[in-house]
Length: 249
Image 1 (cartoon, rainbow, N blue to C red):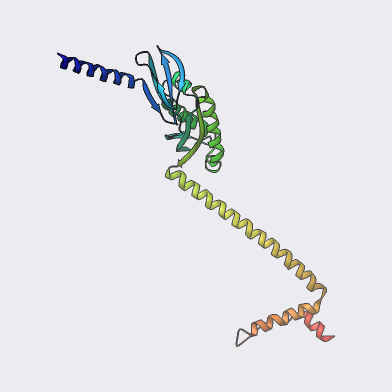
Image 2 (image 1 turned 180 degrees about the horizontal axis):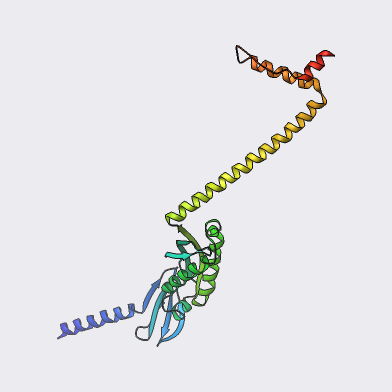
């Protein structure tokens, strides 16, 4: 009889120990526990060792670390009617565990859906050239909108990064042709500027030679010397009238 009593006492003690240990919870530095007592919000606890009374209280554990969430590729039509596929990454964290539990059912899914619609809405207001050239500006705009929308949920959106903007093959070819045409246009402008500068220098040289006929004769003789250095067997050259008149004097 005494043996059975001892066994019963041991079982009771084990049950009590297990029951008491069920009161205890350990939360890490990046975790918080949102405590509800009889269904009503009580307080946010943690980190460290906390006590939660079973049956009377319930704890929902929340993490405060930054979460990296990928936004699936979205089909976007730009303001200039170009169809592209865009994906991005959102960095956010919980700063108010109470609101993240009470104000929204599933904050992760809510942010995912909100990010997708915001990405399409913002990019659809810009032309393709702006998407490609002003990505940092668009990132900041999307981040600001998401941060304002999720503030009531106790969420802080820290950064948004557009990863890829994918174009179809026909649009890639069109952009390549446009870039080639732009390069040709710039080359023609540079060539025209060079011709203009050269014509100005030639005009200045002609004016100087016109004022000094002897300089023209020396230039002519230098040209003949250069031709002679090419070892031509026969050289036919015109003789300027100005040179003859100079010799006659």
